Image (cartoon, rainbow, N blue to C red; front, side, top):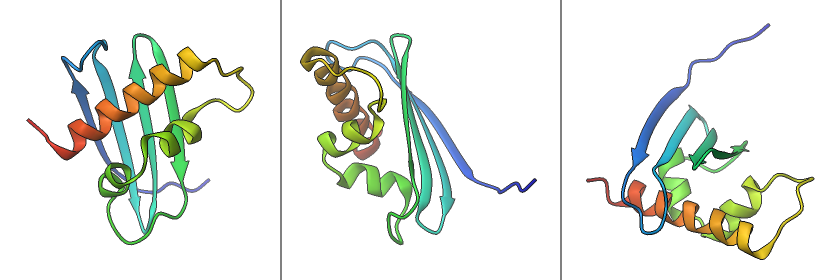
Length: 103
């Protein structure tokens, strides 16, 4: 069994327009590897990035398109409705805004 240290940052976004509070968990392993987990209104989405360059995970997430992140986070075997996907995109956009403009 192998374990690795990771920098973990968790924050909650309150008062995003038309959304319940969003829990954001960033797990940055360094070397361009990391994980993003989002939870809003009892629904959760996550994704793993195995190679995103030399920057930080937070910097990578804020520089991506919201559609790119939502597509990565959508469960592969779950049927995608326009409304559900749109909800996830709004959660991702609120997450990116919070990571760009803290407080």
